[in-house]
Amino acid sequence: MGTLVVGNIGAPGRLNYTVIGDTVNAAQRMEGLGKEVAADAEACVLVSETTLIAASSPDATSTGPKNVKGRSEPMNVWRLI
Image: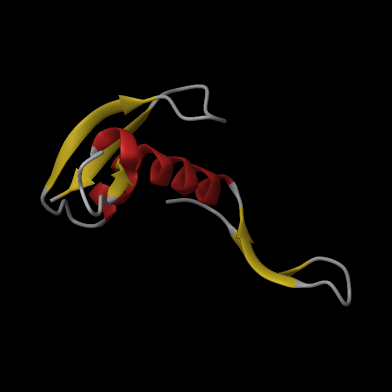
């Protein structure tokens, strides 16, 4: 969870509806971790520890701290059950 910008971004005539921000980057990096965490699974939903707490702690298992590009500290990542 965090701050992001959403809307039409770009020059007139070349606008794209998109989202940008550190939160978006972290989510994209976690998406890439899905294959590492559960290579054989058809689907794998990963969330940050902040999101897990905000969601009233649904059933999840810790995947442990993960190093993700663009972050100096590892992120605690959880897999929803």
